[in-house]
Image (cartoon, rainbow, N blue to C red; front, side, top):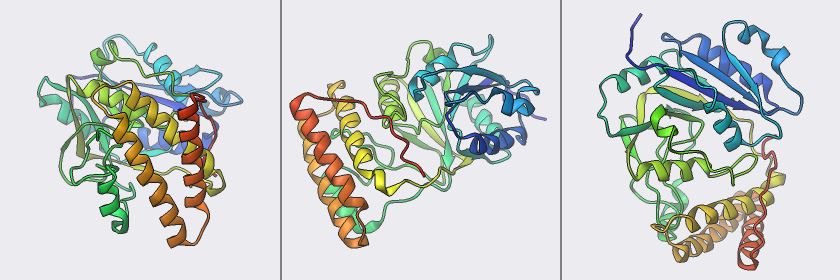
Amino acid sequence: MAHFKHKISLIVPTRNRQELLNKMLNSVEKQTVMPDQVIIVDGSDEPIENDIQHFLSKGIDYIRVYPPSLTKQRNAGFKVVNEGITLVGYLDDDIELEMNAVEKLLSFWETCADDIGGTSFNITNNPVRKSLTKPLLRFFMIESNVPGKVLRSGFNTGVYPLEQNTYSEWLCGGATVWKKDILDKYEFDEWYKGWAYYEDVEFSHRVARNYKLVVLSDARLEHNPPPYNIKRNYILGKMAVINRYHFVKKNTDLSVSLYYWSLIGEITINIMQSIWERNLGGFRLAFGNISGLIDIVTGKLVQVDVNFRK
């Protein structure tokens, strides 16, 4: 078995998804190199501690955080990381690691440059945007030809999946590993409540000002969330607009004017997509976008915590 200089702790926030959590933990158990610590941060409506005793009996740590919030759970998990840990990862409860994912990730950290601050696993089944709308996405500064960019409009460009290690300006929050001493200086922004849409881009953007971020092609996993509930697209569209606005407003290198320009494009493309696909999903997103814009203009920003999955 390979031995590495780094010791890694994996923090897993979870809420009301025990079946998915079990699959994720099973994939951790099958790793060719085991993490040095795994922490379950439970925000479920009913505590799941008794239901995951099989895993806890093997040394996995458990803490309870309620009321739940993804950012709050991540920050709480970091506070119980063991002494001697040098890398801290955050995994969503709906991912499944390939058997050598942790080993491949640690192999990279073994020899990487000191200016690397964070890495991400390669999400191999991440959906790729349809080419039909790509010209419009670029025109409205929602997308660009360069992967892994954070645009001045506040949008981030896709980076997953990939075939070679790639520097990125943002990392997917539920598939990341950071130097522990960076997390001593940076906390997740608890303004983002509940599901905390866009918190990962906001956190990555702050870290990327001083450190390089890399997505690792050989450290692979799958992300298998339940599908979106299309009937809740209105709330999803509203939350996306409000949370991205918060991100743009707090970062002076981004542009509020370009944010509004991209929002026009987002609304337009959502309506076009609904017409093309002959369903109401895009219309609901667009109406949610417009409602979020009204809240921004009137200064009534209200956090939304709704489960958008079926």
